[in-house]
Image: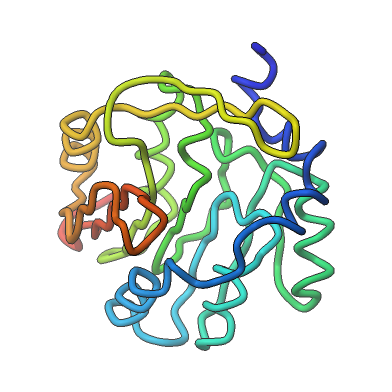
Length: 205
């Protein structure tokens, strides 16, 4: 399972069609997305890391007037995303090596960041910061305790990992993010553990 652990996107290449057909299309994320829009304002630029098929999250943001760039390491998921949202911008890239030389008003890593091995996750906060404007908003989901688990999706093993709450809090603070909201196992959002944080405008980068 080592390949699946280090490159979960390869599993998504296998299960892309299954995922597209079976991914819940209701917008249980809406409350968090609306809060993000309320902070950044409509028309803001958003980087969707691990955008998958683009639906429903990216589709909703676009419908609300946001300018969204989707990034995913799975070429098969992006093929479906491009069919779903043909006028949108998509980039095939591993978020761990992302360097777009662009900044955004918000970054979303919804149910994607937690597919990275725990040893790869801390550096991502540098990547988040590097791609955000001052006062930019970061929205991501995580586990709620340190550990690694394998789940089955579409008949394939899919890797997930998490740091603990205090470690994420320390990483955010070290990169000059202020936590706006933390919700553990949100029952209104599929029991997701959700972080929303804002980058300090006073930090020169």
